[in-house]
Length: 377
Ligand SMILES: Cc1ncc(COP(=O)(O)O)c(C=O)c1O
Image 1 (cartoon, rainbow, N blue to C red):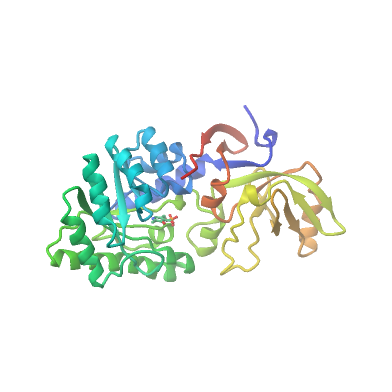
Image 2 (cartoon, rainbow, N blue to C red):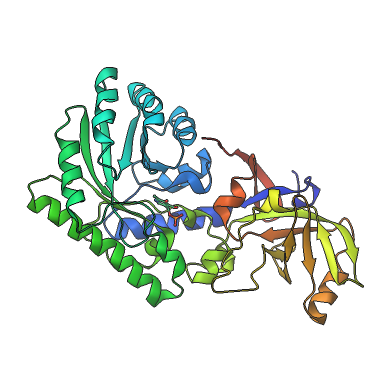
C-alpha cells in the first residue's frame, strides 16, 4: 500500500474519513431541518464525493459548468440544476442534454431570455425547467425580491409551453463577509426570509412556486430553521477549508484537502524555505484576509496533520515561499531540510481542487484511492 510520503509532489490529498464525516453531518442537518440537499459539486467536480453527499437525499446535484453537467450525467446523476444564469450561446448544449434524458434546470434573471430559450426548446421538442435567480443580499446576480421584475419574469416563463417555471433560487454569497455565529446566522435568516417572502408574493399573484432553493455553506451550517425552503445547495462543506474555519463554520480539523509538497530550498540566513507547490498547485486565493490579514496562502502541517506553526507567505508559479516571522518559526524551518515532505492546508478548497486532475485519497498516512476531477466548461 502506498504511503503519503512516497507520492510525487505536488499532489492533492483528500482525507476520506473527514469528507465522509462532513457529508454525513450536513446531510443530516439539512434533513432534520426538513429540506432536500442538492449539493453544489463545483467544489470538488468528483463523482465519488458527490455520491457521499447525495446519499439519502435523492441524488439531485447543482453544477456551475455544462462540462460538469455532462460528466455527472454520464455517471448516473440525472437531476441537475445549472446554477449560473443561462445565455443564448449555451442553449444548444442545454437542449442536447435535456433531449438525452437529463433533468437539467436552468436559472435566469433576465426578461430577454425566456422567449429565445422557449423557441430553442420548442424546436428541439423538449421542455426546459427554469428557476428565477433572486438577489437575497449578495448583489452578484438576481432580480430584486420586492420589484415587479420577479412577477413579470415568472409570468413570462409560465406563458411559454416549452418552459416550466421551476421556482426561485438564491445564493447568500455575502455570508462569506460575515464572521462568527451571530453574524452568519443573520445572513442565513435573511437568505431564507427574503426567499419565503418572494415566494409568497408570487403565490399571491396566482403563480405556483414548485421550489424555493437556497444555499451556501456558511448559511447551511448556521441557519436556525428552514420552514418554507425546499432545497439547500451548499457544496463547500464537504471539504471545508481555512477560510471556513476562520469564519467560524468549521474547525481546522474538519478540513479535507491538503497539498503534499517537498522542500526544494532552505536558507536559514534569509529565514525561509521554498516548497515545490506554487500558485498552480494552490491557487492564489488569499483566503480569510478580510478577517485574518496575515493568512498567507495556506498552513503547513506534517504528514500526520500536526500543525507546524508555519504559513505559506508568497507564491510564484511553481514555488511556494515560507518565511519565518519570529524565532519560533525559524526553529520550525530549521527542521525542513531539502526533500522533506509537508502538507499545506488550503485557503479555498474549490479553487485549489480546480487546479488538479485527481485527488489522492488517504486515510491517515495510507493512500486508499484516486478519484478523478472533471474540469472544463
Ligand atoms: C449559485 C450557487 N449556489 C450554491 C453555491 C454553494 O455555496 P458554498 O460554496 O458556500 O457551499 C454557490 C457557491 O458559489 C453558488 O454560486
